[in-house]
Image 1 (cartoon, rainbow, N blue to C red):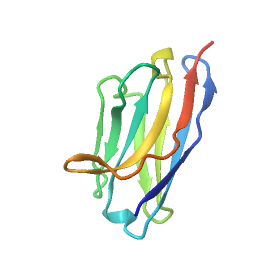
Image 2: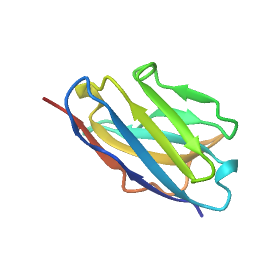
Image 3: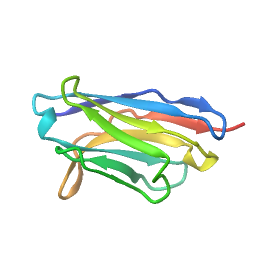
Image 4: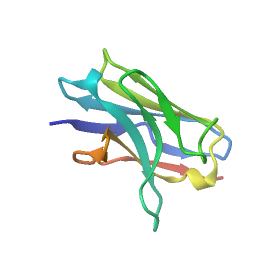
Length: 117
């Protein structure tokens, strides 16, 4: 069973930066593809970034060139570095294991990101 705990969210002004962290409790971390999703009020949860076991990354068009996903297999952590934040980036952000069928397992509590002046 994979357990995930997100942290690092907060209130930031437009144009600011945040780094989200996700601690993953599992013995098979290096074998997992992982992703960051977000859910804004009244909207569906959407995948914003993913990273494979080999370190290949993919991004939603809305965050490409502003967000960077990375992983540290030794620490069993996955990160989302966010730059040039916009009010529309406001959402609860979640990390999750990814399979060929999409997200797999239980969602964590997420971390709130609010971009506002």
